[in-house]
Image (cartoon, rainbow, N blue to C red; front, side):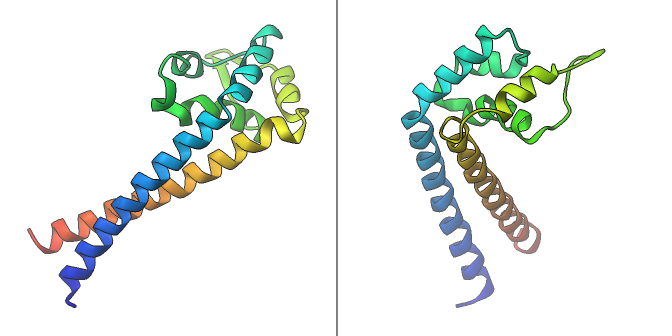
Length: 137
Protein backbone atom coordinates (compact mmCIF):
# COMPACT_ATOMS: atom_id res chain seq x y z
CA UNK A 1 0.00 0.00 0.00
CA UNK A 2 1.54 3.30 -1.02
CA UNK A 3 1.26 6.65 0.75
CA UNK A 4 -1.40 7.92 -1.65
CA UNK A 5 -3.65 4.95 -0.94
CA UNK A 6 -3.22 5.37 2.80
CA UNK A 7 -4.22 9.04 2.60
CA UNK A 8 -7.23 8.25 0.45
CA UNK A 9 -8.33 5.47 2.79
CA UNK A 10 -7.84 7.75 5.81
CA UNK A 11 -9.87 10.50 4.17
CA UNK A 12 -12.79 8.20 3.35
CA UNK A 13 -12.63 6.55 6.79
CA UNK A 14 -12.66 9.91 8.58
CA UNK A 15 -15.54 11.12 6.44
CA UNK A 16 -17.59 8.05 7.39
CA UNK A 17 -16.74 8.54 11.07
CA UNK A 18 -17.75 12.22 10.83
CA UNK A 19 -21.11 11.31 9.32
CA UNK A 20 -21.68 8.75 12.08
CA UNK A 21 -20.72 11.31 14.74
CA UNK A 22 -23.15 13.83 13.25
CA UNK A 23 -25.98 11.32 13.33
CA UNK A 24 -25.16 10.20 16.89
CA UNK A 25 -24.96 13.80 18.14
CA UNK A 26 -28.24 14.76 16.49
CA UNK A 27 -30.02 11.70 17.91
CA UNK A 28 -28.53 12.33 21.37
CA UNK A 29 -29.83 15.90 21.31
CA UNK A 30 -33.22 14.77 20.00
CA UNK A 31 -33.48 12.28 22.87
CA UNK A 32 -32.83 15.11 25.36
CA UNK A 33 -34.64 17.91 23.55
CA UNK A 34 -37.41 18.05 26.16
CA UNK A 35 -34.80 18.62 28.87
CA UNK A 36 -33.28 21.38 26.77
CA UNK A 37 -36.65 23.06 26.23
CA UNK A 38 -37.44 22.84 29.95
CA UNK A 39 -34.06 24.37 30.82
CA UNK A 40 -34.51 27.14 28.26
CA UNK A 41 -38.04 27.89 29.50
CA UNK A 42 -36.94 28.03 33.13
CA UNK A 43 -33.94 30.18 32.18
CA UNK A 44 -36.13 32.64 30.27
CA UNK A 45 -38.75 32.78 33.04
CA UNK A 46 -36.07 33.99 35.43
CA UNK A 47 -35.32 36.86 33.06
CA UNK A 48 -31.67 35.92 32.67
CA UNK A 49 -29.50 37.10 29.78
CA UNK A 50 -29.74 34.90 26.69
CA UNK A 51 -27.55 35.62 23.68
CA UNK A 52 -29.12 36.29 20.31
CA UNK A 53 -27.45 33.25 18.68
CA UNK A 54 -29.13 30.88 21.14
CA UNK A 55 -32.45 32.67 20.67
CA UNK A 56 -32.11 32.43 16.90
CA UNK A 57 -30.90 28.80 16.98
CA UNK A 58 -34.10 27.61 18.65
CA UNK A 59 -35.89 28.00 15.30
CA UNK A 60 -33.53 25.74 13.33
CA UNK A 61 -34.15 22.34 14.88
CA UNK A 62 -31.21 19.97 14.77
CA UNK A 63 -29.20 21.99 12.25
CA UNK A 64 -27.49 24.18 14.83
CA UNK A 65 -27.34 22.04 17.95
CA UNK A 66 -23.88 23.26 18.95
CA UNK A 67 -25.08 26.87 18.96
CA UNK A 68 -28.00 25.86 21.16
CA UNK A 69 -25.85 24.32 23.89
CA UNK A 70 -22.66 26.40 23.90
CA UNK A 71 -24.23 29.32 25.82
CA UNK A 72 -25.09 27.01 28.71
CA UNK A 73 -21.72 25.24 28.57
CA UNK A 74 -19.89 28.56 28.81
CA UNK A 75 -22.10 29.67 31.71
CA UNK A 76 -21.46 26.36 33.49
CA UNK A 77 -17.69 26.72 33.02
CA UNK A 78 -17.79 30.32 34.25
CA UNK A 79 -16.46 31.91 31.05
CA UNK A 80 -16.77 35.68 31.40
CA UNK A 81 -18.94 36.87 28.48
CA UNK A 82 -20.24 40.22 27.37
CA UNK A 83 -23.99 40.49 26.85
CA UNK A 84 -23.72 43.90 25.24
CA UNK A 85 -20.75 46.12 24.45
CA UNK A 86 -20.93 47.76 27.86
CA UNK A 87 -22.35 45.00 30.08
CA UNK A 88 -21.30 41.51 31.07
CA UNK A 89 -23.72 38.61 31.55
CA UNK A 90 -25.53 38.72 34.88
CA UNK A 91 -23.85 36.79 37.72
CA UNK A 92 -27.27 35.26 38.42
CA UNK A 93 -27.14 33.48 35.04
CA UNK A 94 -23.88 31.78 36.01
CA UNK A 95 -25.22 30.90 39.46
CA UNK A 96 -28.41 29.43 38.03
CA UNK A 97 -26.64 27.16 35.52
CA UNK A 98 -23.88 26.14 37.94
CA UNK A 99 -26.41 25.25 40.64
CA UNK A 100 -28.45 22.94 38.40
CA UNK A 101 -28.68 19.29 39.47
CA UNK A 102 -26.35 16.95 37.60
CA UNK A 103 -29.18 15.27 35.66
CA UNK A 104 -30.21 18.60 34.13
CA UNK A 105 -26.79 19.71 32.85
CA UNK A 106 -24.66 16.55 32.49
CA UNK A 107 -26.14 15.58 29.12
CA UNK A 108 -25.30 19.03 27.69
CA UNK A 109 -21.70 18.74 28.87
CA UNK A 110 -21.45 15.24 27.39
CA UNK A 111 -22.84 16.46 24.07
CA UNK A 112 -20.32 19.31 24.10
CA UNK A 113 -17.47 16.78 24.57
CA UNK A 114 -18.82 14.73 21.67
CA UNK A 115 -18.83 17.85 19.50
CA UNK A 116 -15.23 18.63 20.51
CA UNK A 117 -14.22 15.14 19.36
CA UNK A 118 -16.13 15.64 16.12
CA UNK A 119 -14.43 18.99 15.50
CA UNK A 120 -11.01 17.43 16.15
CA UNK A 121 -11.77 14.67 13.65
CA UNK A 122 -12.94 17.26 11.13
CA UNK A 123 -9.67 19.16 11.58
CA UNK A 124 -7.76 15.94 10.96
CA UNK A 125 -9.88 15.31 7.85
CA UNK A 126 -9.03 18.78 6.51
CA UNK A 127 -5.33 18.16 7.26
CA UNK A 128 -5.43 14.94 5.23
CA UNK A 129 -7.26 16.76 2.45
CA UNK A 130 -4.65 19.55 2.48
CA UNK A 131 -1.86 16.96 2.38
CA UNK A 132 -3.41 15.31 -0.65
CA UNK A 133 -3.90 18.67 -2.35
CA UNK A 134 -0.34 19.86 -1.65
CA UNK A 135 1.47 16.69 -2.67
CA UNK A 136 -0.75 15.40 -5.47
CA UNK A 137 -2.09 18.40 -7.35
